[in-house]
Length: 258
Image 1 (tube, rainbow, N blue to C red):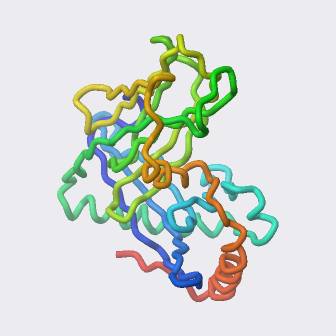
Image 2: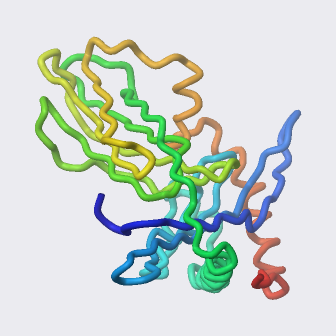
């Protein structure tokens, strides 16, 4: 795999959890950030893939492009109702980087465990021959967040589809989605090839028009990666109130280093 070489360390703290009132239940809005470092014998500690994001019930609201200091909204309409200063994420990430360096030294640079992904490929919409659709490749439950996802059509590598950021999970593993626009044809066979340090060799999942549709619960569990959750407008008011409350208290918020 390209990118970071050798060992890998990841620090993924839950920076904040907020509750949004909902009829008969509680909804969770989370502020999450992680940093990671690899170690190459030639170069020493390397960095890459640090992220800062907000999500609602596992659905991304936005993430911060740390390099360009920009807030990137998963659903553009959210920025109509609220805002987030991308520069505020830089301080959190700087503290996490310092904390991770301390933890690496305390552990005598013991590497994190490589946990392989589970891979699923399915179409976004019911398949109709000749009708444009979207193939979704989900890599789930892996760690560290360093992974390659490649699309192939009839054995040939095709132009990469859109990829999401790494979505953290409650068990400190990650998931990532890759999408490929296609027109269903019974003669075509598609593959999603996934490479990860937890795999002895690349894992390849096949899809063609004869593959059964995913089970309803499977579709429900992965639809969040598409940013198409039903009833999203109903949570906007609660989300906006929480963001405004957070911004008022931002001056008092500090994450202390280890």
